[in-house]
Amino acid sequence: MEKVNRNKRKNRKIFFAFCILLLSVICMGGLRTEAEENKIPLNLEIENDIGLKAGTDKNIGQDIPFVFEIIPEEAKNPVPPTREVKIIGAGKAAFKTIYFTTPGNYKYIIRQKTEGNKNWNLDNREYRVNVSVKKAENNRLSLSVWGFIKGSDEKADVFRFENFYRGKTGTPHPIKTGDESHAEPAILVLLGAGAVITCIIAKRKH
Image 1 (cartoon, rainbow, N blue to C red):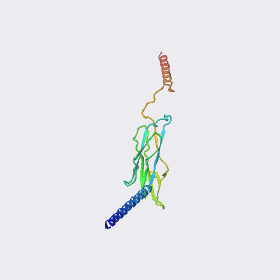
Image 2 (cartoon, rainbow, N blue to C red; image 1 turned 90 degrees about the vertical axis):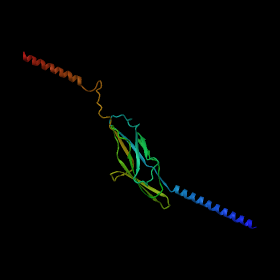
Image 3 (tube, rainbow, N blue to C red; image 1 turned 135 degrees about the vertical axis):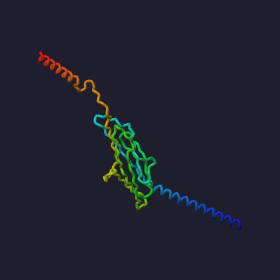
Image 4 (cartoon, one colour; image 1 turned 60 degrees about the vertical axis):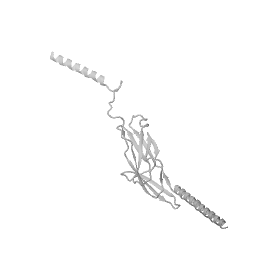
């Protein structure tokens, strides 16, 4: 009888331990789910425009990669998995998603990283981006984003860069056949005038 009671007590302990373990797993799963749900994503899109010198081929620049980067002003700021984005020619692109899990104010800088080219005027402006993350009444997070060009208080609705192709410099303009240049007629006129002057001088000497 005593052995049976011991087995019963042992079974109760195992049952209670199993229940505690099960509750712990459920609670941890609930906390993890809440943590995963209690984050808010942000996708920052930028736009690249290409300006061309008058008379330039419209396809110039459409195969050139323009690179842009996002820089956190503080090390604690969440960042995307890749801090750069590339746009081929003119167009739009977005940085990979940034996730925020904690209320606060976060600041970033967006700028162009494309290397200089003597035939281009590259846009060197810098955008300052402010992200405000707040906790709403339902314990969910909400955010607001605004940006402005560095050195200006004017808000920017779009993060736009404008790169201008000014054409090749230092290349002489070749004179084409049938060019509007009147070099040959001018030379003939000068030769004719010289001949006339020579004749007049010769007559005066006689």
